[in-house]
Image (cartoon, rainbow, N blue to C red):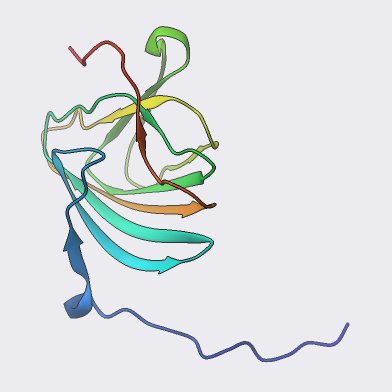
Length: 131
């Protein structure tokens, strides 16, 4: 199999990362790291005790790596499926999976989030508000 050098490798330096405000989900800080037609990469920070509304990511598969703090993911019928992830854990959220994220820990949660797909990246869903 013949191998070729890829196009130029890109780096996004910390001082060039911009916080982005979106209308999809309020209450946490997003920093756009890389956006391409096929997907995106972000870092996100959730305040302690924060819990968000239900959403899904349309045609995007989402991967989440917990850097610090904790991440609680509720999913499935009635949100009865619960995963509590800690630093070093990696989660996969399949496209179209309705879920809710939160930070149950006493410190801010920092995450790296990548999405592969197209279309709207976040679609809010009506449902019960978090407790």
